[in-house]
Image (cartoon, rainbow, N blue to C red):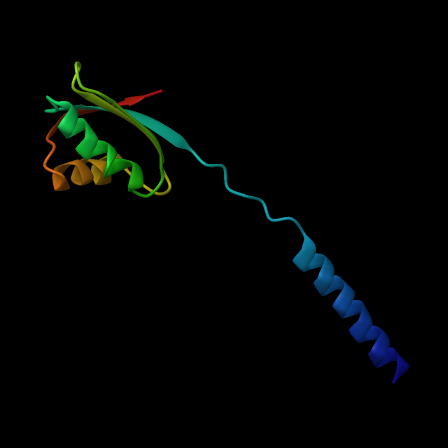
Length: 102
């Protein structure tokens, strides 16, 4: 009987150590892409700022009306350039070109 109790005690300790072991987090890869759009006023820029930053994985959005560009930093595990292009289309902003920055 003592052997069984000792065995359960050892199993409990091993299970406790296994649960308490630190989990290795996957490294997040952040991509930056510059979209050339048809923005022509600050109202359009505000429309982008009210929508795009709330998409999944977005870290930063910068709208430049004079150059008609939108720079977006995002987590590639949660979003993609294609999905962001669709998000722009859903708010009626045309994307002409998307260039990924290094």
